[in-house]
Length: 373
Length: 260
Picture (cartoon, each protein chain N blue to C red):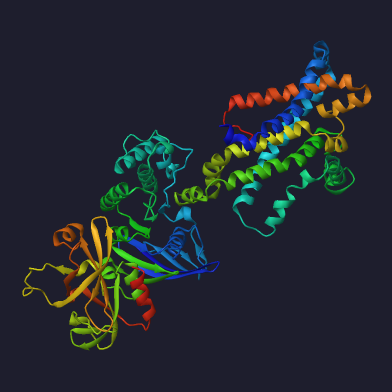
């Protein structure tokens, strides 16, 4: 679907990325200012890379070596920028039909109406953009981008300006629409949840580079580096060393954890644990039937109420320096367990929940990860 | 209420003084006029010819500026090129120049025996004492209004609209025509209206380059210096009325025309 290799310098910012994907839905994910939008602009032809290659659906549209630079109007792409602005001087139907100037008027109108139906806005054609809600404008922008012979749709933070319920509904709609129209989609987002929901493939950006690119689950479950682990929302990143097959010892505390031995080679690692993968054990729960893993005992020393989830900060029993672990429980579990009054708990870490990232000799990053969460 | 506005109590007085200064001479003109005399002057061949020359040349100058200055405004707003910041300053030159100096510059360059004028002269085109010279003088002094206001108008159009147009298959020209220009329209039209008004009132540069045929401002000056204040008044009145009528029609015709 998309292949690119880009180098672009903008003031003090330098983008240097390479990527190749056959996925129908690619998400460029990362913090703002990491180069996602610049990448999108280069793919669209709205910005010229200093060096590189861009190939859409097997057709080269940019190649600095052969001075090929197909202008944006001939790249057959659809572009929905941040905030999805519509042409304010045109009606909704005129917006949607903007790219169909060469078609006969009747066909233009029919196609506009058909597209408006596809985005669940039938009969909206005569309205002015200013009369539409944010979510409706977003849908019209999408219909407009789909109107032309598009090979690839580029959506830059498409939902960032919308209210949470509208955003959720639109994501669903886009996924449903994606099943019906045969084009590739590239989303830019800094929203973790959104990235997870929309991605088939995901490229994690930081500082003008792609830290990791792969299938969604690959990236979310097996981050390649501590930075990626942090970006995909893993709050527990603990330096550790292998002690025997299937077992690592945390460097500072000496606590040993059982790990999935398949991935284990002798050496030093970062043990990455998602907060929602740690189980707080009911006091009366039998522990004999558990899957392989490690039982720990700890005290709740911090709490964060996150709506329907509660993040609990545990200090694990261990001397000399007790490790700290973030554990997410549902609000309901929090109440039924009685965490409010009882702070001492048994925690269970399944071996499969521990993902080991090779140690890159960067302890500071690891402690930064912990304190930033 | 009083407390809230207290600090600005002087503003209406200051503004009122200025409004008085601007309008009082006009009102006084109305009071001191002899309507029959205006009527008679309005019928004069000389007045009618001056009026026609003014309307025609100002409109032609504005039309040429629309074709030349609007694209320049767009380039200044959207493109980067060497010398752009210098050009941004230079477009104000006609405003900085005293009108008479502008006329002298134009005479030097477009006079029959110098500069570009010599070339035109060999082709049989004369600017001195010719309506085309009047148009040149008006264009010269009015150009900054169109360039600067249309540049500002294009700058105010979010670039993203033009980018979207490009991705929808329209090239730069159609994008300019279908998106940039319509969205910058109000500002561009305001610039053109300013230019037309400035051209109608243009006197200094015209006097130097093309004294003949008379435009209304030149005719006023001729009357004033020839036979005195009283004979200039009817021409002044006619000029003001015509300008107001044209502007009024324009505003009525299109509510989006705004000068502020």
